[in-house]
Image 1: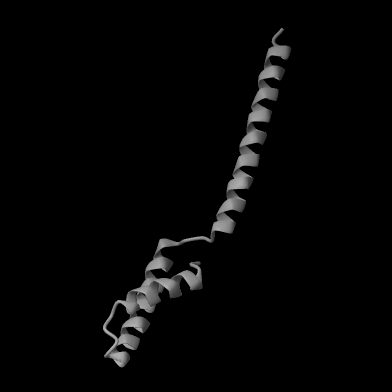
Image 2: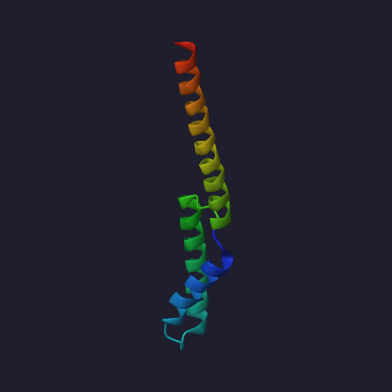
Length: 82
């Protein structure tokens, strides 16, 4: 999911631009904004950067393994046809 600190930073930044005189109104906006952002980020189906990096590393290793197997098959094909 999305990092809670980042969500809090976005919400705080936006609500800090609101007038300071209406504290209760500002709290309502902040609460609704947080809920709206959480729902929007959930729809995006985001993953943490660390998880993305792990999956990328696995994919890189898999691509290397496929390339190695393809070379072995090519060598085996040229050897058996001679």
